[in-house]
Amino acid sequence: MDKLTDLLEFETMLLGRYSLTSQRGAGRLDRSAYTLLYRLRMEGPMSIGQLSEALGLDASTVNRQTAAMRKAGLVDRIPDPDGGMARKFEVSAQGAAQLEADRAAAVGHLDTILADWSRDDLGALVGFLERLNTDIERYHGRPWPRP
Image (tube, rainbow, N blue to C red; front, top):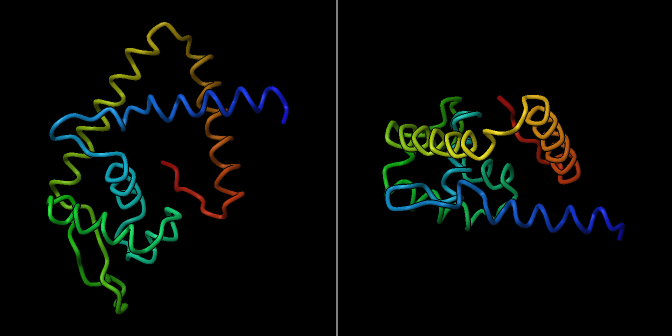
């Protein structure tokens, strides 16, 4: 393994550890709920099978996550808007509000942490992270929609 990929592995491990979505307190979304709500917000209603495929998770895992999120009022289970047989999940009003509050907090933390960065450096970081993520998505065959 190249020394640079060794260092990249270490830094991405730390980035995952420091992830702002994992630094949650009472009333905050956990990382899996944050990710799932974000995906539903971007794509619209999705079934367990679609979420399982999109997130690369076992259907039983997604089923447990959505059941807990439904119980917490974060998602609603609805008939397929396209008339299909499978019921789908959509972000509830409460889920949308919680996602937006958590997202605003994460962006606020990033604004504070990156306050001394130049716009050019920040733009370069965003560009490299997007490139890394899209290459990972292409490798796994699961693209993530982008805003």
